[in-house]
Image: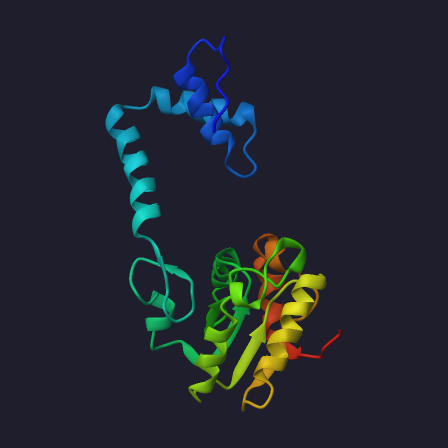
Length: 208
């Protein structure tokens, strides 16, 4: 439940600020600036802003193949026949896909796990799309799985778990070069470094 200051000049303004401030990385001052900015906009523009967010939340879905967000059942990347569907890059989040796509160099496809194994946070293998990835590999058309996960304990645990799951299948398991930030930091890596880290990937070697 939002907290509304009883002495605020406008409780409606305060309520709007509270909502903006609930977003990641948005403090109260920035939230106030956003709210006052909207107040200056024509009603039609504000209505479009609100309806776009509402439509996004209600209608966006996860790709049935790779779990990337999409407007349709299968995302454009998975539908693209010009992509190399024999190579799958495994990432933690949707943001990682966007970061890699921004380089314009990777032409394979993806698989979004939706996180990493983290017992402390109550996230186990069944909470991720690990089994869906294995099913894709079982199709027989996949030749390489690239692990682009974080190098912290959770990321390494997830990579090792995947490595064991894929053992016995006719697929090469590799990992991108360790000269770039991974996981949540992947989106902040410059495009050249990120592109090279994928191009210089090596066979995955378990460290745990």
